Image (cartoon, rainbow, N blue to C red; front, side, top):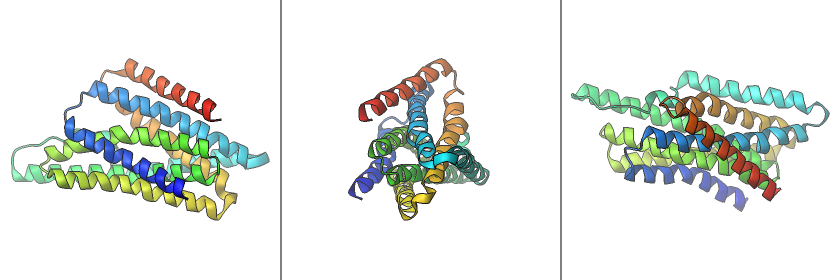
Length: 253
């Protein structure tokens, strides 16, 4: 349980760490951001496949493939439903400030919506980390948590600029960033206890968590990293992240 708590704090804390970095580097270039985010996408892709999807097949038994496929699509559909309620992250990442009180109020509203979207998307990521520990495979759980944590750092960084530009105070900006990280901590415990209560749902839960991560990678991360002219560098960064996690999996296995 102590390990789960420390991991939850680490995963959530990665967002806060990224936010702190964002205060010092408010105007990060798109190219650098795309490279870092693509690397994180590669790490998450490996974590989803090696730490969630493949273990789901192993725990599922004879008919594990059916449960795994059902879990993957259910996880993806769940995030698709969330996307209909909140905006895609990349659509609000470039909020700008216009003159006039009405324009300022509009920008603040957009930024709040932007931060809310990140917080909501962080919940299933936290659940994925918790489900990993619920499986009992500590090395795979750390692989998943590491992938999510690496992705959270650039995510925390991109929160800061739009909020400060919209006129929100640094203190309130940091509190909002902390909240998005705490959501992930809560999600980690939800995933862990859900699997601990009933091991029968473990194969489905693993696949569900894997499906949410695959959805985020395909729907959010890859389109964002290929939208600013850095496609080649982003592609290689993704491959580096993926291969790095392959190495860790072999070393920890």
